[in-house]
Length: 285
View (tube, rainbow, N blue to C red):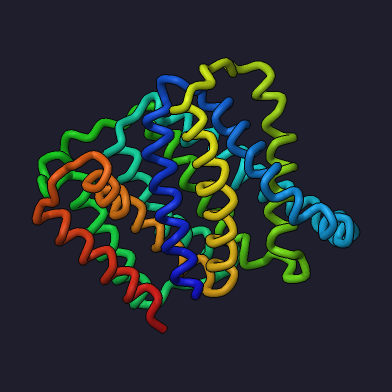
């Protein structure tokens, strides 16, 4: 079950990258982050408000930790990603994002003294190879022409914030209801984001395209993806679960074939095989 949950997270987040790039020219990044989480907050509220009141003492007890989760997972990560989409290419963003599992290994080693097993290291390398093949479209010369810009650095910072978020999840107080945890970090993340939102560009057309984007990122990329990711990571740990982010460019390729009518090339088939093989090794005990 945790493997299915983490796979669904990757699917929903792949759509988030595609739609945020699509909306980059029409919705300011901070506005997209803000309204994404407002939608998520409103959807969760009917299911969580009673439980939040019941667990208020527990929330107060863990408030510093929850503030950190809200900052890393809600405010910082999403703002950096949406801002980066205005400067960097999809190729660069996906390549940098694929380093999240490696960052998770490093953060786990520093903070928790955990070491990756040989299967996890081999699986991470194989998955990363598969992701790289997708990103460079089977042409290694593309890798040599990559240039880093401010957007690339923003994605790198976002990847680090997500790695830290994922590692710290294992230490979350088990008494906290998962939905209560998500709703509380959304509230705290919005509080931290609100001053930035007030002083940033926030106007955009409320047309069907932008409404679709906001509701998708608010429901699928926020509520459903976070529930799946948090549950999966808490069950199998960040070291194993982190490699599932490699599925994002795989799903991105599939989405392009279905919705954009692009052709499936041999290098894409090879890379998808490598990614799934890597995840199998990474999750092997």
